[in-house]
Length: 586
Image (cartoon, rainbow, N blue to C red; front, side, top):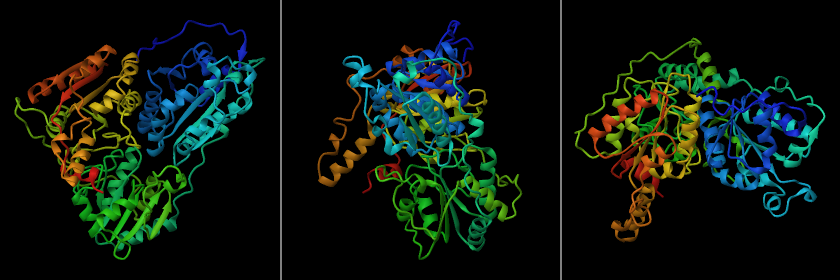
């Protein structure tokens, strides 16, 4: 990213306003960027970021849609575990962003979202526009899926709420928070900079230590187990935590199940990894769970559903559930999933728990995995062959074999058996709420967070996902964020074709009609042109394996030279049998 990018001319500050104090508080909270789409409800704060702060610390990430702003903060948090700031314009911007906020809630990532409203005092409202951009309780739009919200009525209260929102968002279990500023508070002149709340004096609360008694209880069960299974879910991107997971599994000979909804949690080519990571548990993993005498869930998404699918019950399997999820359960959002049977349920961070269980087992603090993990061999495909999702995976894997790549996202059609995850940043997971359109923005945010980490950011997105969020690419190109987006373009909302096929078969109706209202064709959409129009380096459409090999090499070189790259790959429609069954099974 160029150092002089979006650097404003120097401004001589002669008079202070409430928004200057709000901007200074944002700086003190340590966020390096603020993602936004401009709006008049925060015009005062916008001016303060530009002219009082000089558009640095935080620097604006201009987005072309509010949903992209939240998605970028989401992608950032998936890498760093830290909140990025977002500003949304009034009720209309909040409504635009609501799906992305729900994704972040379901994915348990932190972010601090700032909103703004027209004057709360009706006498100060401009005709027409301030009325339709003012809501009596703006946060009611998203309250079921944010951790905390506030609409402070004074500058002092606004500054305190900003700090509280940051602390609450960073406190486990992490989730978005929302603070809505009155435009009048922003634009009110102030005589001097007020005393700002000190973040150093308000540290985020620590979770209670995973007790020796709890660690001993889990260790005791594992020590007696003959067929233990670990379900590794939402865990950290920290290498030491990764090493402890591997060491613990090896110590007890535990089979490990991972999924593709969450980030890489365990090496997928390790002998103890069972099945393949997928959106729905694979048959091999189901069998291992069904045969287990002890199952330990480490913040697994929907453990109750997984155990029921595998047929695991408490009468023959000891089930331990370690999670923080119960602390966010509410009556509106059902992302708490089905009620989980367990013999022992512990509210704790999963990596803290694993650290304590390792200690109870006598494993050294620096313990790392010992078993050999063989290199993946990628099958070669004929150069003139059309591209399937599996041959795309093979060809992309072969192209990246000598690169230190991070897979930022994978499509719903991805075959988990093609995954080779060897470290915590190898794959960052899905979007939490399974909403379409989040992929481009999240990829931009993750790629931004990976700058300087010696990683090549690569996202594989579906065409529907890309097209809904395509203008997020402009933000990446503008800020010179190196990354590769491979669009697995099957010219259809194919997930719903699978559902329509299921319905047609159930009702004895023509399967041939499943594409109606689903196919993205006639006219064909030039995805490369859309990307190139926004300043990205674009390739495609790519139709065969030989062209794909050559194009991926060009894309890698372009990204390594600092470019934002989009590749339109035309893939044949299709899902793996496991995915198709999981998506449509009643």
